[in-house]
Length: 290
Image: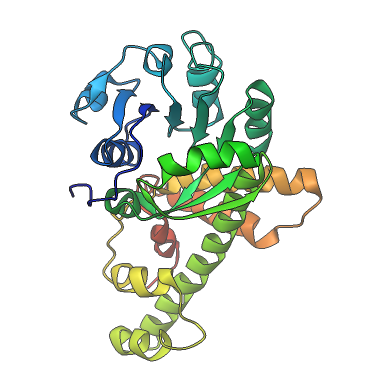
């Protein structure tokens, strides 16, 4: 899907690190908004597939950039591209802003903010479809100055940007988001199987209940595909388990009890054992017999 037209912001030089299914369309949106974008990806072919200028290292991409954006895999990946050998931080100008769209631990977000003046932890919601459409929701943590510097960049691919608090708050908000999704998907999965066991017309059940208090995005968008055993719709169970692990660890640190989250995480482990790790999160229904 080509980037949708955007009102052009002041052009700036931007480095984008991580050109996977989320990062590549986000980088293209930045270029479409008129920015001078250089990309880096560990697998160079993926960077080249964006059609944008490609750097050999995160440091080379970041040199001279007004903003450096990352969307990689996990804490270790973020540490490598920022603080590691040939990492971006050593090459960044003092006034440049670092925007991390990776879902990582709040502790790492705080550590990065301690290392530089302008750092935003900015995990997103909306998945691959949201990235391609430029309609992501961003949960931004950081200082007022950092978020102000990051906002003109993020507007190229985000429909909603909320400054939720200081460094680490963006990551903790994303954890709350994933906790909610886990519970909703388990409820939808059980309702689908209940309707099937009861011999109900699942299309009519969806029509009846999706207009009331039970309605959710997951119900409207994933009920029909759960019924059809179709699970190729973006965010993989492997990544969801990573995110839930972060939430459970942070909950333990905070003294917050998360029994439902822990239970659904175990259910996802069962689906992984069934070979469903790369299927989307609605494959949770697979562990429930028809």
